Length: 273
Image (tube, rainbow, N blue to C red; front, side, top):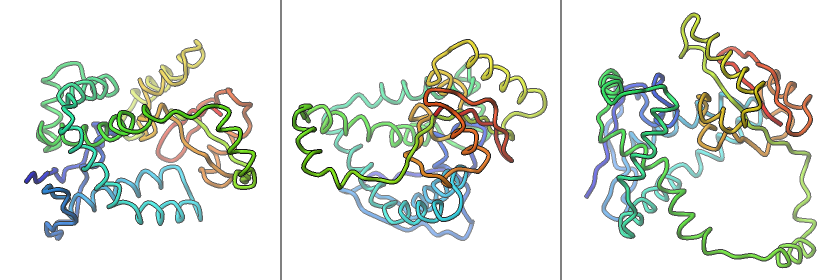
């Protein structure tokens, strides 16, 4: 039996990839939320994930769309965590090189956060009250499920263009939707960058965009939003889903264009339609 433990300390200074490890009320008593082939998902972990999910959605959605997304996410949260655990177990059975996955994820995390040495990382983990094992566990649960889905499903499914076209013609009515749009975003969180540092980071992002650096590369290097794990991509979206100032700027663009800096209460944003 493997019981996974996570620190209750905050991780605002580390990375959105680690926001599962967040503060919980002191009154929470450790309980079992689910058994997964002998492994345990605790109620504390479930509550941590819910807090993270609420924070992530609230940072970019408002109104009815926020309420709808929160309801949908809460309804599937435990199922999603069980799925992740099953896929991680499957990875172990198939002999996936988890140490290699962890090291690649750790290297990406250090690059994104500007952590240059292992000592800097250890100091930060100590400051946040997180062990190396907890860090490894979190990074694997973030990255391994998608790897396994690709190995077990996507890489084995072959659908021809002719089959796609035939299916569409037979089910055309099912594909009618309201107007939608998608954006890629770069987000710099103001509270993470005191004083002149915020202006410095913002200038680097603006200069990188102006120089023609691919937007996805800038996302990977600078963005501090959960969407960075998906090269900044969010959507499909409908009118009213985003904060007004972000949506107004995004919908004023032509496809492929990038906005200037958009300042909201908590962050600076750049979006590509």
